[in-house]
Image (cartoon, rainbow, N blue to C red; front, side):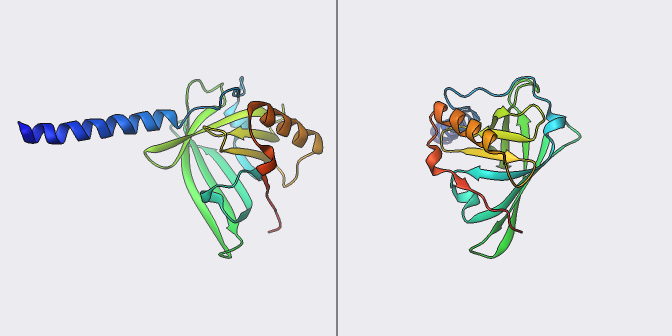
Length: 180
């Protein structure tokens, strides 16, 4: 019986911690609101990363793209690709995204390393699905995406202003080069 308690308690606490971590990581920053009336089929396809915060998975990368396609089960296949200009090689990550609630709300969770999921929240987008502002689970993650390698100044300013109002330090954005 003592052995049982020595095993079951740590395992139970570990499972509880994992569930807590997992559910917290798919949040949305305070003050951010995901796009409503979202149409995933319009969002699918290739996006170019225009700007992002620096974090380890994309460190030293330019020419970054994200491609989204629909899986047969309704989840979204995610393929991120970028050129590491320090290592001088292309790198790719394959993941999956799922809607957090309703498919008409642009709140998703994405995983490249299951069972760890992170928030992917489209918080602003033009009506033609050409430009998107994407928030992660916290103020550490933000992306500006475009269907082309450039973005109009008016959209750039709109997204930056919205991000600032939420609490993002937009001075730390890295503006991604697209030259390959």
